[in-house]
Length: 432
Image (tube, rainbow, N blue to C red; front, side, top):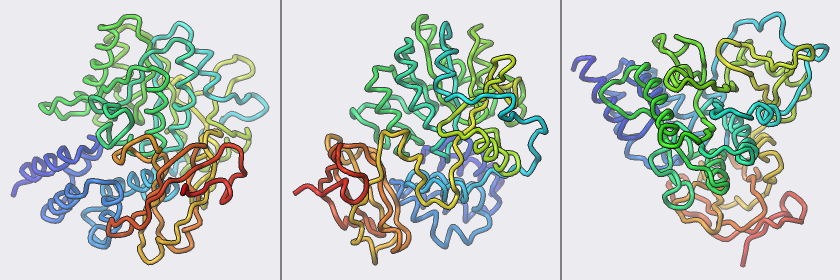
């Protein structure tokens, strides 16, 4: 079989699975044709994040050199979906060993401000604000969640996310049919919040299969967003994207493509506020951690120059501001930012029945949503000592389900998280 024939088959498998195009491109470069073909055939047979996680973390995949790279990225994404965000980072680290610029901001010349507050001050008169994320780092979704109510109060009307499928809230709540990255509980909470606030949800991914180039994707996304304003010239849009799509500098995407944000500005003539959360990766992230600790960052934040009042951007030709995230201990199994700024609390639930059935998935769904809903939170247990690990839940009523390593239900019952009792084991109870 020729390399071209292999690429076509792999691409067909990836498209059937619904994976993002960045992973599609990586897959077509694999060299072991038969094993990669079988990999995607078997992956496509597994329809839930838990099934995919068990497959991706199993020996047949992990022992195959030809599958590493894109398979590890898929595993990292699955780990993020299943409540293990630090594992996701370890499984797919974005290595950047370059030294940080010598003139990083310090506390003698810069002040720190929550990014949501600074963006709100910049929103007046703007129709479009673009914020990016690292797809396997759910912590980069906290800013969007905080921005939704602030920008809605300022008159923003549309929330656009590249991961959305045609009708992300068709069921009245987020499901696997809402999108790909929306399968992760924090992203699902973003979808619920946007719908609750009355935003129009906008899918804008480029879906024309006739041109698979990076430039076609960037330009196609920009055109889809521009069409929103063509239909409604008064619309104000918060755009959520991955990585470099929100750059305003030519040739900064793969294959020297011009990014979506720049293409959108060319099409519409509108200025765009672009916010980056992904590029402070020098020294394998240690430089960003130093910044976070020096400024005592406790929420996604922007650094303001005391002399000029302008926001710091490490890449001013590309982004209007770089966000500094709170430092999070890499050793934490479930970092405390999962409280989502106080929306949720750590709740200990009974996972004892998982022992002997590992890996085991604990998932808590809102009681008023269907069995196809993305859980409010979930956690995959890999070792007996992890059965005391908390879920992060807001006060309310849930259905708790435990699934064993063969997908069998080990427990299924109602769960109540009161609003006034202490956090921890006493803060939740199984309903009779």
